[in-house]
Length: 71
Image (cartoon, rainbow, N blue to C red):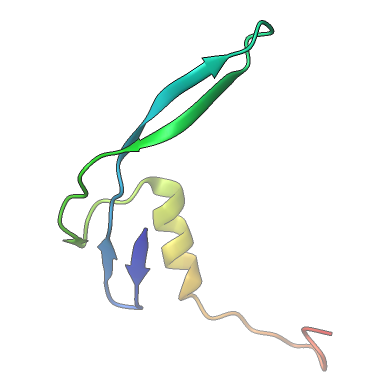
C-alpha cells in the first residue's frame, strides 16, 4: 500500500506467503494467506514501475475542454 502526496510517498508492505489448504483432482488449489510481520513504513520506498507510474500520473493535471466532462 502506498500513501502518496504530490511531493512524497510512504510505502507500507504487508508480506505474506500462500498456505496450501487443499488440491482438487483437476489441479485446482485452495490457498490461504500466511501473513508475515510487517516492516516499518518506508518513506520514499522503492516502488515497482507500474505503481510508480500510477503514483506519478495521479498528480498530473489534465485539461478538460468539454462542457460536461463527466456526463
